[in-house]
Image (cartoon, rainbow, N blue to C red; front, top):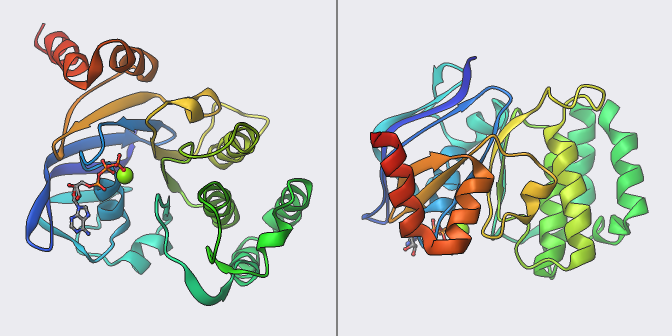
Length: 253
Ligand SMILES: Nc1ncnc2c1ncn2[C@@H]1O[C@H](COP(=O)(O)OP(=O)(O)OP(=O)(O)O)[C@@H](O)[C@H]1O
Ligand SMILES: [Mg+2]
């Protein structure tokens, strides 16, 4: 199986401070991986670096996407290659309405338009369409709008940064459905999936989107990986450090 994404020995600084240290990760085509880790461990920074945000300076290491070295490419070029992120704290973009972004995306992918417009109407999201992007939206509303933009653009590799944080129970159901739809390419072949990464603290989103594997981040590095549900259960039962002790013990056996 080919890897859609490979990260090799990646070191990243933000404004001179090293925040990611020797990150290695491989995501095979068609797999979705979860990332767990305590606050401040570097999860968002990893997604922002993969996306190519210019604050995140790669000092060494490589990012390979579909076999091509994209380490030196900027954000726009990476987006054109099909990488996208639903951000944890996306900016407000004054002067650009959600409707304009969706129309632009529909023009690239018309088949998607009707299905998405039905989803927008059925879930009362039409009230966001004529507002500037994220302007005055609540945390839970931002989660929905971020996912909507990913559904409209249909990236090859979708990254979701805490899509399930701070959302009420009903919105969580909708977000789960939207995420499931995002990662399924063809509803009649559910095993044939779009690839990506999902950061989650609670794992709630993983009830809708199956994660093939989970990586645990601690202090700016990926310390181990394993079955997503088992890793999550271990974190719940005994904390991040204990979980990593288990993973490392298994790797060394
Ligand atoms: N733009 C920035 N400027 C300065 N420090 C930053 C910046 N971005 C990230 N950091 C620092 O890097 C570290 C990792 O932050 P990051 O947001 O990646 O953590 P996280 O794992 O996503 O945490 P959380 O679970 O709280 O979202 C933190 O100590 C943070 O303060
Ligand atoms: Mg974060």
